[in-house]
Length: 116
Image (cartoon, rainbow, N blue to C red; front, side):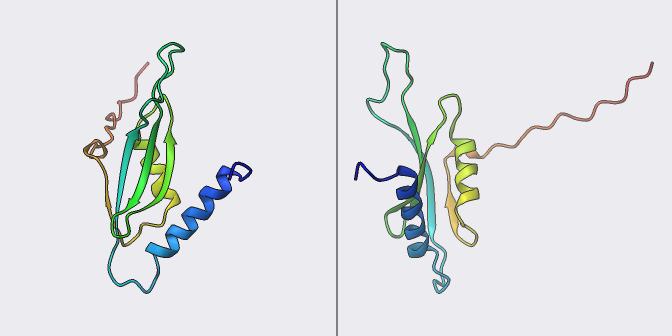
């Protein structure tokens, strides 16, 4: 297993998971849960390294992890979920996420032009 390319293994698992859960002949929607976890013992206080965080897409029906990605150190789950949603074909399925994903992007109102 050490000689395998991690990216290729991840790709193969994602394809396998997609074939199991998103088959066109399935009449009902699958439930896919997105959840982030902090990896226990992955922090290093001596070297000031924060704990690693991973986001997983979990198929509830089959208890299968469809995909997972590492969350950037200076980020949170929100961009990671958006990235996985773009990579996975979840159209027609039920997707659940934590409450932190119930945010509205605040837009600044347009400013009137300045007169000189």
